[in-house]
Image 1: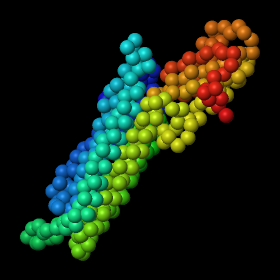
Image 2: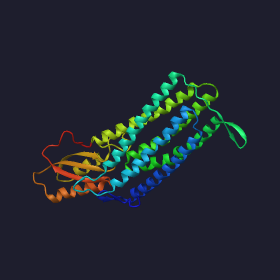
Image 3: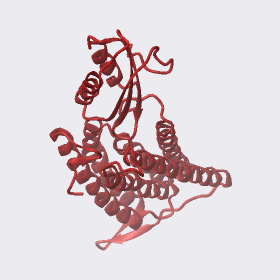
Image 4: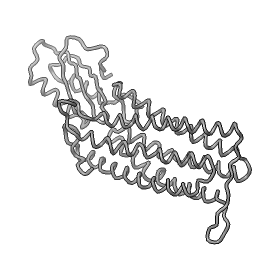
Length: 325
């Protein structure tokens, strides 16, 4: 992971290179931190269904980090004749894999939680000997969950959220968003454990169901975003909330050329970079190669994410192209 400057056919600007290095470090830190928390939770999980679901949720949270680090190995490779657009789609594939895994396991956990509630299963939380004292295991569960939540909510969650827009990385953004929402899992598991402690056995199953629904929502949202991106929807911002403003900037730039009468673009998001098809209606029928080359180079200079540009002179703009308004 040391050679992070190479990114497809170009080299990253200094800001993005630093961001990539930081993202790699945070992803490695997250894997180590989460692996430790998984081991610690395993020691106190007991018979609580809420704790078991939270434990599995922690295991699932490793998927986005592994997917990101794996995809990064591919997106750095230069385009070849076999892969003329490069391997940037690997980031989208990793996003899809993470989403589907979350959705599938979340659905399974939700079914288990509902089945347990219907069957009226009464979980029991026993006691342990700690430093010569008898301690209710539930207190240890609560203490562990409170400590576990510190990392994702206060450290690597916010850190990744700052890096995602710099890199235009939707997988990193989804990872950060899931980490920041981990407090909900913690609160639910604590409520479930304390519910068993005061005799409200159904709170444990209800908490497990709540956590499962959170996993399902994360899985559905990530799967939907990854699928529509892989289907070449109109390029959108890193959080998928709105069309990417670069399309408007490209059209404005082209219209500023003295030989261009009208312009529109088709912008394809390939994971972290864009493939641009720019259509221009020239004022005159003859357009020189120098003018087309200069226009393509000008578009490339607008943003580091532009890696492939095609400028096409046309008599009429395609209806599906973005006019930049």
